[in-house]
Structures are given as C-alpha cells and as structure tokens.
Image 1: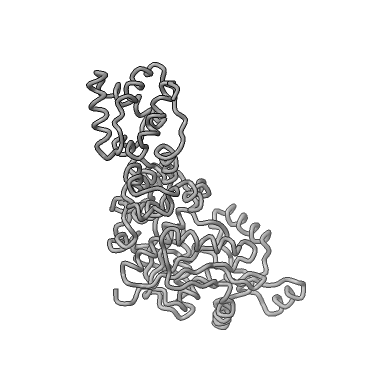
Image 2: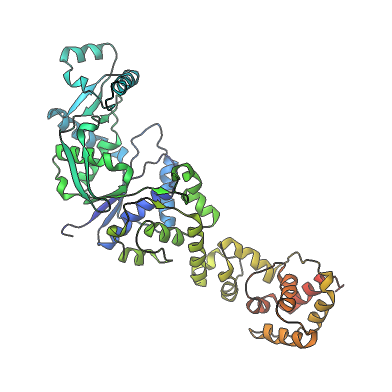
Length: 450
C-alpha cells in the first residue's frame, strides 16, 4: 500500500459493546497492525441525550480486555467548532440548505409517495424556500435543521470485501447533517473527522453501504479525494440458525461474555476469522494480525455459533501456561495443579472446584455397595512421600487384591476421591490430594468411622 494505513473504530457511547461491534473493532485493529499503520479510537458522542460517560469508559475497558490498544483517541463532542466551520463551507457552496418541516409533515409526505407507488424519498421542497418564507418561519418560532444536497447520478467503489458496489443517490433522501439545536449528526461528523485524521480505509458493517455512498459524495463536497479512501463492508452476523443476531446482542455483550467466563483470546480469535476462509485458531493477536486479509472474507452473512466459541474457549484454556493464569487461580494454586486440571476446564472459574478437591473439603458420596472395595482400597494406600507414580502403583496393587479391572476398579475410586463422575486424570490429582485426605474420603464413602 502506497500510503501509511490509518483506520478508526468509532462506537457511540450509548450502550455496551457487543460481538458485532467487537468484530469491527478487531478488523480495523488487525488491518492496521498487519500493514504497520495506525488504529484510532473515536467516540461518536454528539448525541447528547443518549451518550453517557459510563458507556464511554466501558467501551475502553472492554476493548482493552479484548487485547486491543490504539494509537490515538478523541471525542467528537470536543470538535464542535470544526464541524461548525465545515458546515459553513457547505452553506456557502449551496450544498447545505435549511428545512422546517416537522416530523408529522415528513411522515405525511412519505405516506403520500408510497400510495402513489413512489419511493419515500424527500422531495427537496425546502430547496425552493425563499428568504421571505424562511424569515417568516423563524419569526414564528421555528428553527431550521439542515440537509445536504446530494449529487445526481451514482457513487461507485470497489469494496475490499464485497467487490463492485454502487449507491444511486437519486434513491436516497438528502441527509440531515445538522439538527435544529445545531448539533451535528454522525453522517456529517464522520466525514469531517476522517478527512482531518487522514483516514485511508473505512472498515465497517454491511449495513453502512448506503451511508458510504452518501459520505463519499459529502467528502468530495468538502474537498476530499474519494479515490484515496478504501472501503470494506463486512457482512452482518447471524445466529447459528441463520436468523438476525440483533435480537440477542444484549446477551452477547462483551461484558456478559466476560462475566460468563469467555477468555479474551478465544473471543478475539473467533471474531477475527468469523466469515473468512481461515478457521478460528487459539492464536495471539500478533499472529492473527500477521495473517489478516480482508480479501479472505465472504460476501455472505457469517453465523455466530456460541458452541464454536465455547469449543475455542476450551482450547485456549487447555493451552495456557501457568504463568498466564496464576493471578486468576485460587490462592495457593501451583503449576502442578494447573497442569493437572487445565485440560478438563470449559471455563477458568471451574478451577476453584478442583482446588477444593485437591486442597479443601468436598461432599463425599455414600457408596454402601462399594464399602468392602473402598475399605480394601484404603488399606492398600501406600505410605508417603507420593510422586507421579503413586496412582499406577496403588491401582496395580488393587487389581491384584480385588480382581477388579476397568470401570469397576476406577469409577468408585473417582467418586470417593473427587465426588465427581468425571474430571482430570487421577494420576495427576492423587499426589495433590495427599494420603491423609484420600484416606479420609475413602472411609467416608464406605461410611467407615475414622
């Protein structure tokens, strides 16, 4: 690429980030890192009624939890003077015109056009407003909002994901850029900031296709070069059945997934390749960035399958070294403990249950039908010290003494020692449980007094 890559992620701080947002943020981040460019975080907070400082803080926290960092950040609410100056340029060129219709009037116009079989596109009636009519409207207490006069014809570009795309501007209403209270809208502020920040690529969801056509026209009106911008629109996510994911986005917020035990590496690895030709792998961000390719993404909708994410979460946990999780394990947990249990975890919080098994108290099940065998097992427990060979030595002796093999031998021992039907290998757990605890649990399961 000839120019240094500069991309941006521009969430509105009106709620928490969900998986759809995170996928777009990741795509921008990985694209920037892949090409040695810059990744900017822009908070689109000009909506005074809905934007909240707590949501802005939550967005940055969630992005950092996911592993992302950025080269610069700013809020649009700090740049109102810049937007005002750009609006004045558009007014001077005749591209920004005042409007006074109420929402009720606009709705009536749309309904009338639909009844006539026409598209509900704004009729540009206010373009013909005379100075006297405007003066009369303002004298009556009305304040204008401002629309951008779109060019004639169509806007076309070669999308880095979807291929050749175009928007016929005649089928789009002139967008409102400035509200009656003089606050600017997203369509306008985005273009002004993209120009000011030298953005080279805009990577976002497919639902912005029409916005892109409008914003390219606006960018040109502000003196920018539309050919200097690359666009990539990722198809929207669906659920595992192909339905709209939007109905489930609240339950798929990053906050919720984090609370439920999803590892950030698993979520990042899954979203980074979801919808592409590359299979999700539990890889660090640096590796994902090195191989990130927008051309590998399909033009079809991608299915977000929670089962696939959970499977990847297991793979991430199973591959984590003790040093990577030590601070999140129960106090006193050792590398040997982590090595013993990590391959059996779906979520890291489950390690607490296994820590209780090896170092605390559990509810030992009553196994009266196995009482004689468990008493024999207790009698056969070798003296300490124990090492990694203790399980084999003990069970070999029990085979000879009881004549049992397979499940008949191992299942009652697992139940007595761990209180669970399945779990980590007992060869790794038994040395951690220790002789005194193992002996007490065998006798308790047999209901033998200590």
